[in-house]
Picture 1: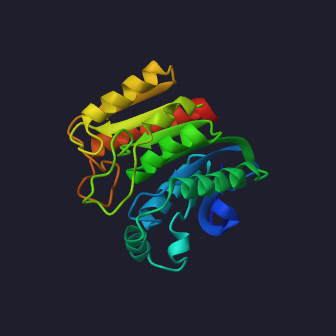
Picture 2 (picture 1 turned 120 degrees about the vertical axis):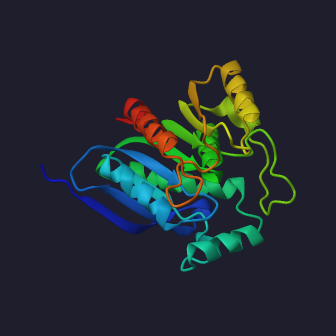
Length: 246
């Protein structure tokens, strides 16, 4: 059976109707396909995140990764754009939500879309995926070790991130959380707090914590990579999205 993918850079309308770049990958076929918004991590709109976007396309999803740092310089290398974002105090909640909403509208408007769209993010992107579940009309959300959901970023970090757990009452879709037992941001205690609050609010969610894994265990290009946790984590992600989006 023929298998093919299309991967390209597109332009979407983001926060404030600003045009920003986004990386789109999808199967070559008529669909309809479910959608996934891949939210890049703090290091930026980099090759590793685009590879994850293509991974979803290879599994039958229309995947899009908006460049949240586009306004700092659309042609900057990922590390330079990330440095500019750090110097600028990162990006606001409103800007992220506007850019993510633009990606959501773009995917749902494609002729090959089945109009069911989820989000996934890693590290800061995990926090933003949780935020998207609280504020946007998405169909599923995956939070991979998103920090600063229940506590603010410490002052020594160059990011302004306030807790977002108070927004959890607005969650309108199932949430999958994947965490490392050796992580400090979020710590296992913080994960327990998030779990308890979602349970109190009767929000559909499932959390998994992996032993012998810390922050960044999915990152194949970093020393933090943990193969057993990552393999099982991907199995859980695709099972979750299959149940919620297909």
